Length: 264
Image 1 (cartoon, rainbow, N blue to C red):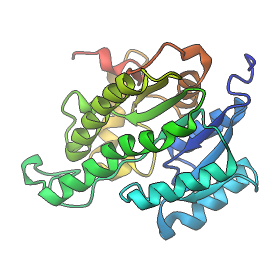
Image 2 (image 1 turned 90 degrees about the vertical axis):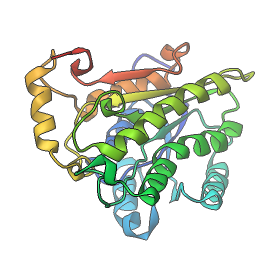
Image 3 (image 1 turned 60 degrees about the vertical axis):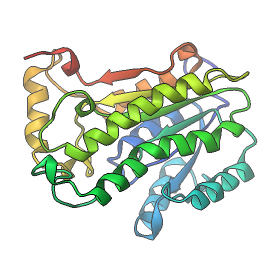
Image 4 (image 1 turned 180 degrees about the vertical axis):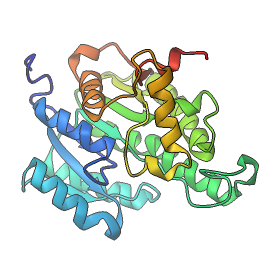
């Protein structure tokens, strides 16, 4: 490890890349620049070709990438069998997976209209998946490791229209803390943290009704008068995966221009 390459020699799994604007992609670029070897997933045939092309063009033709559907235990098992074919050790994992189906109240409208099946699906994919992936990756973290998940401030305060995803992020953050307590007591401790990112102009974020207004509010009210960039999120994720964060676990780190501290 060096100051220029703090992740040199480390192996990381990056989940959730959908396109070049994804937060996961920004973090992957930072990890790669810091010296890490990376393994990726794509989710289903719809995203397969685009994600494979993006990953191969950016990180090299020999970069391992495989399908992973976190709603299926069989798919998770197959993915980590694939990972084990390419490395005998994993040092870090990025959880950048979230989903809320289109249904009344999920990402706009009345929160009280959210259907039971939409609630169950969102919590399963957005929050339980962190538990499932942590359990699956733990045997490969033979020297300890770092797991980082992405969350958002709506887990703590009401952000109009974030609705079901806010509940999923709250469940994700609590799961992070319990996993940190559980996995931190291993002989080779595994650290688990969340990055709470401010609004970023991703395609996924634009699925939230009123996102443009949300982005504007951060520019008006945060101490730095802005939200954050993919590069800044990548730098934070690199810190959390590095030896410099060896005693940091169970935390939610806000990378949002300081918006989280503002009361009015």
